[in-house]
Length: 299
Image 1 (tube, helix red, strand yellow):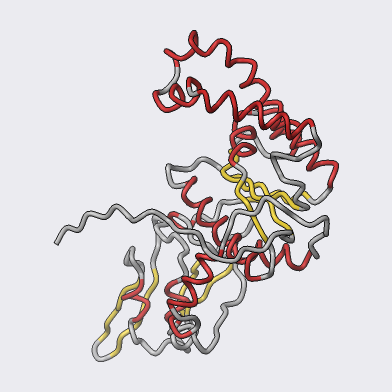
Image 2 (cartoon, one colour):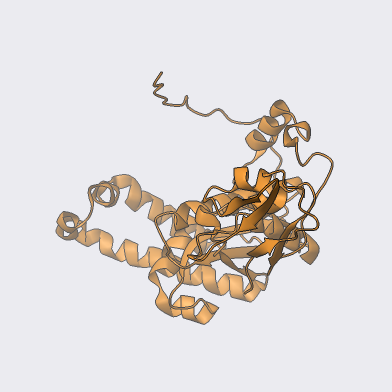
């Protein structure tokens, strides 16, 4: 997979405005002076550049030479993105987003799926690693197969419940509280009652399952995945599609090396998110409330 690489400056295009120097957080650009003349230089012998592209974006004359990446994208509001959408409209859009668990039996055109993936592609990541990879499943039989696999994890949990008093001392405090709670036993019973009646309690019969996986490069891998999938969820909503993040499937795939191998996920990758997507078969009349933020101001 090719990656962006800054290779220098086109001296004929450069107007020596020094904006690249200002924008580079690792100071890879400098001014070389010879008498009254000056020249902007780029030097990265230790490969400090993390390919953020700020120098490319800020140069008024497109003088930054680079390889391994697409052409830049410009539009009228690129310097004033706040003019594209008001805060009130943005908040309406954000608050309208729901986790959808009721889907129409209707395929999603492939171009729309690509549009959602494009939104994920442009999400930020720590040190601009862009290391996320995706599997898109649209085959009903494969989705049903994976749903059954995840459900089997729930069955294992149900079988272990009678032993909860024995295993509780070896669990974390949060997991211990969960397994000892009567609610857990009841929720598992309800889960399998609905599963036995034909409901898909894992993927909700959504026509698309998207799996995000990546190398575990740092503690930021998980947050990076969350940002990418959030971009995808909002993009899907703009296209008339619903989404839901499936934590059970993510947990199962994190644990099951065999299933990851079957899906073609390399050994050095972990699953950091599973998203279902499709046309929603439910309409909401209002946005629900949220609790107040807990904020400490330090002034």
